[in-house]
Length: 247
Image (cartoon, rainbow, N blue to C red; front, side, top):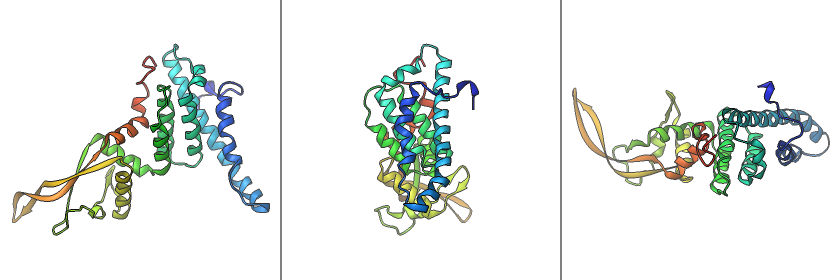
């Protein structure tokens, strides 16, 4: 942590603290001894999570300012889109320890700086980060950089292509078991992140030492425009684009 960029005790970040600090105190603990126990066990680490989260956001914004002195972080208090995004993202950040999700949330907040107008997709995207696992995010990354993935049906399967349970995802050379792969792909399909096109898929088979090309029913999975927008929103590569192009 950069000691030169410690969050000040009294500045416009107080508004963010005020909006998010109550999330810890509002946890629905049981009464009596149970309440005292869980308050003792959970409150300190949750407070640490929030402090680290806000400090990381502050450091990120300071880096933007260091890159371009014309960018004034004090103006962010007038950016309602930013205030809403950082408040919602902070509540989600308290509920996870996964670094991939924390990075996605941080990028989402920083990207919101460049959009002062109301964008209802932002809340949808934040809800998706909350619901997704790190594996979901890694799969979306693969689809984003490899727009089409061919899935070929097994011999004798019907054409409704409900056989996603036959797919095993490979993420960073790690094979994801079928049940989990099916759950992830179905999640992404239902939520509109990816879609599929059915038809004849050319495949290569080897028989008696020779290679033959033949057609088989199957489908292409591809990332949708909504999926691309979601990935852009949670990606670091987009932080220097947008309305405040001078940043």
